[in-house]
Amino acid sequence: MCGIIGYTGHRPAVPLVIEGLRRLEYRGYDSAGVAFVQAGALEVVRAAGKLAALEEKLATQPNTTATSAIGHTRWATHGVPVERNAHPHCSNDRSISIIHNGIIENYQEIKADLTAKGYTFTSDTDTEVLVNLIAEGSKHQPDLLHAFAWALRQAHGAYAVCLKSIAEPDVLYAARMAAPLLLGVGTGENYIASDIPAFLPYTRDVVFLEDGEIVIATPSSWQVRTLESLEPVTKPIHHIQWDMQAAQKGGYRHFMLKEIFEQPRVITDCLTGRLHADNDSITLPELDALPIPRRLHIVACGTSYHAGLWGKHVLEHWARVPVNVEIASEFRYRDALLLEEGDAVMVISQSGETADTLAALRIAKGKGIPVIGLCNVVGSSITREADAVIYTQAGPEISVASTKAMCSQMIVLVLMALAWAQRRRTTHAEALSAAHSVAIVHTLRALPQNLHDALPAMHSRAKEISRAYANAHNFFYLGRGHCYPLALEGALKLKELSYIHAEGYASGEMKHGPIALIDQSFPTFALALDDALFPKVQSNIVEVQARAGRIIALTNAGVDIHADDVWVIPTLPAPLAAFMALPALQLFSYEVADYLGKDVDQPRNLAKSVTVE
Image (cartoon, rainbow, N blue to C red; front, side):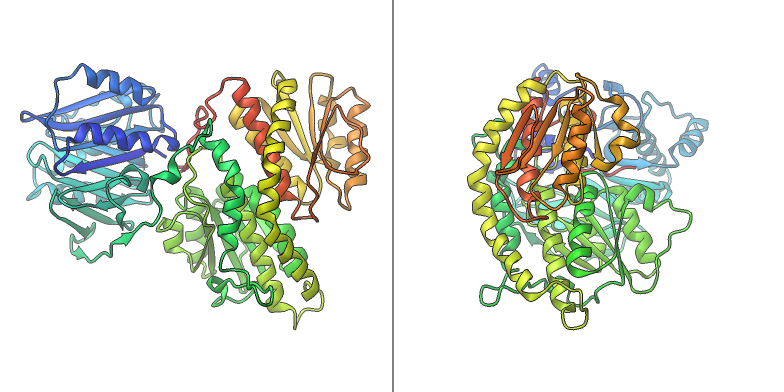
C-alpha cells in the first residue's frame, strides 16, 4: 500500500524523492521519511502525517548535496502511525537504512533471535527487524549484496524493499516478494519505485521485477539477480506510453471528480479494437486460447467485487455461463474449495497487486484451473501470473476511491459475455441471438457520447440533492437484479468518502430485518430504473415511506414514482443502464463528502493498492 522511491544519479536527490513521494500520495499513507548519506553519515528524517510535515522538518536541515536517497510513505501495518514507526529504519550501528512495503510474517521470531544477540529496537515494526537482520548478515557474508539476500531468504511474507548504506552511498539494493516494485532506467541515473508515477517525469523506461529478484542500481548501471543464487537475470526494458498529464487534475477540484468525468473516454478506449465496424462482432483475442468455462468463478475485493457481481448478470444471461462471485479473502481460506475440470477463475483487480486476489490466483493455478486476469496496470503481478489477461485500459486512477476502474471492468465483462455468446451461438439454443447482440453493440457505440452529454446535469443534480442529506448518520441503498451490485457500490462510496454509515441491500431483503431501522432520520437511496423489476422496487419504496423514511429515487423519464427527491437520468436498456446509474451514485457520494469538507481523494484509513491482508 505504501509508496517507495529510491534515486541514484546526478540530481539533488532529496527534493527529487519528495517530489516522487508526492506523486505516490494516491496510495494512502500516515507518515513519511527519507534517508541519504551526507558528510559520511547516514541521515534519516521522518514525520508522522502528510508530506508537508516531513518537508517542514527538512527545511530546518542543512542543505544536502546528496545525489542518492530513498523515500517512503507508510500505511500502518505494525505499530501506530507515529514518527518512531515511520520509514526509513536504520540498523543499530546506523550503517544501513531500509524502506519496506508488505509484512514480514516471522518477524517476531527473528526479533527474538536478534535481541538475544544484543540488538535493540525502538519501533514496533517488522521493518526495523529486517534491517538489523541484514546488518547481522554483514558480519559473516562477503559483501552487502550477499548479506541482503541472506536476510531476505529468512524473511517469510510479502515485501518490496530498498536499501542504502554508508559504505556504498550511490548504490541502491532492492528486492520484491509478493509486493510491487520496479526499476526506472534513466541516463546517468536510475530509480526504484513501487509505482511508475514516482519517476515518470524523468524516464518512461521501466523494468518490471518478479518475485524473488534483487536489483542493484548505481547512477550508470543496473543489474537484476535471483534471490536464491544471485545469478544474473536478463530483463527487458518496457517503454511506458502515458505521461504525467494523465495524473494531473486537469482543472477539476479533485482527482475523483476528474476520473468520474473521464468515464466516457474510458469506455471508448476499452471498446477500441474490440468491436468490428463491419459486422458488429466482438474481438477478444486474449480469450481465444481458452475454452468457454463450464463454470466461472469471479474473485475480487471491494469495488472490483461489486463489478464482478454485476458481471454475473450479463455473463449468465447473455453467454449462459454459470458464475460464482466470491470475495478473495474468503475464497483463499475456504476449507473445501470445489474447483472442477472445465471451470475457470477470473480475478479482478485495478492495481493487479491486491494481496488476497493475487493469493486466490495462485491457489487456482495450483489446482490446475485456468485463470483470467482483469486488470488495469500493465506489468503488475496478476497480469504476469494469469493464463490470460484482459486490460481495462482505464489509465492511471489517482483517487483512492475507485470510479473509472469499475466502469472499465464492467465494460470488459460486457465484452466477455458478448464474445462468449458469439462463440456459443451455434451450439447453445439459449445463447444471445445475433440480432440482440447487434443491438447491444449499437448501444455500446453510442454510450460514450451519451454519457458525456449526461454527466454535467448529473453533477448538478448530485450537488443539489447532497446538501439535503449530508447530515444523515445512516443510509440504505436498495436495488434489484443488476442494480443490487450498484446499491452495494453506492453504499461503499458513501461510507468510504463521507464516513456516513451506509448499507446496500437487495430491495426484497428489506422486510426481512433491515426495515426495522427506518425512521425520519434514516434516508434510503433507491435505484428505481425503468426495467422489468421496477414494480417490485416501487413496492419496496412504499414500504419505506410507510415508516416515514425519506427516499431518493434514481429513475428514468416517464416512470411514475413518488419520492422526496426524484433524480432522473437518461434511459438505457437493462443491464446497460448501469453505466448511467454508476456515475450518478459516484457523484452523489463525492458531493456529500466535499460538502462535509472530507479529504475526497485520500479518505482516512484507506489506501489505493491493498498489498497486505
